[in-house]
Figure 1 (tube, rainbow, N blue to C red):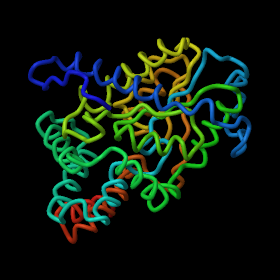
Figure 2 (cartoon, rainbow, N blue to C red):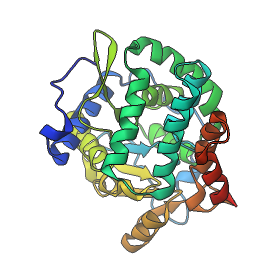
Figure 3 (cartoon, one colour):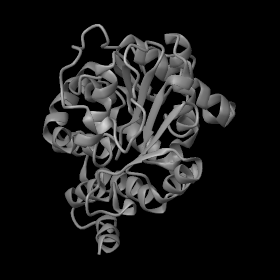
Figure 4 (cartoon, rainbow, N blue to C red):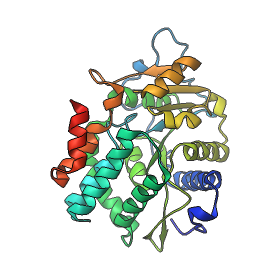
Length: 317
C-alpha cells in the first residue's frame, strides 16, 4: 500500500492513530474484497449457528448485515503472526537470535495480558524490521505457502460453520485482526470469506518501508476499522454480528447488535455473561487461559531452549 502521510506515534494521539489504522484497514479490505468471486451455499453445514432455542440468525437476505470475525483463537487456533514468523524463519528471513527475541516478545504479551506501550512498541518494531525492504508480492506468495504449512489445519470447525452461515444467508464476512492485512487476506480467501481488515504496513512502489499506517489493528483500532468499513459498505451495525475470544475486542463487539464471545478469555466471558451476549466455546478439554500458548511454544522451540519456551512449559503444567 502506498504511503498515506505517515506520522510517528509522538505526533498523533492514540485515538487519532487508531482512527488512521482503522480507516487504512477498511480501505485495504475494500480493495481486496472477494465478494464477487465467492460462491454461495458451499462449505460446512450451518446447523451450529442456530442452537439452544435462539431465533433464526443470521437473517437470510439482509444485505445491510455483515459479520466480523477476530482471527487469533477465534477462527484459528493460536496466533497468525506466530505461524507466519515460523514460516519466515524456515525460509531464513532472519537469524535465530531475532526469532528468539520475537518469540519472547509475543509470548510475554500473551502470558502477561498487559499492553505495556513500550513493550508493544518494541515488539512492533521487531516485526516490521523483518519485512522491511521486501516486496509485498514476495510476502504474499510466501504467505500462501505458510498457510498450507502451518494454518490450514488450525481452523476451528465450529467458528468456520458460523461464518458459513452468514455467507449462506447472503451476507459478507470479514476477518478483523492485528495480523498483517496481507496475511489476513490470504486466510480470508482460503476460507471463502469476503475479505479482511488487518494491520497495514506502509509500502512504497511495492516495497515495505518498515513503518505502519497508524498503529496495529488492535483494540479500539479494530472498532474504528469496522465502523469505517460499515459506513463505506452501507451496513447497519445494529444488524451486524461480531465474534471474538478476547476482552481487548470489547470495543468491536459493542458496536454490533449481535456480539458473540467465542472461546472467550476470563474477562470477556465475565463481560459477555453480564450483558447476556451469546457464547460459544470450541476448546474441548482446555482452559481459556491456555489458548494461544501452544503457538507461542512452537516458535520458542524453534529458537532452541529459550527462556520463552521454558516459561511457556511452566505455564502449561
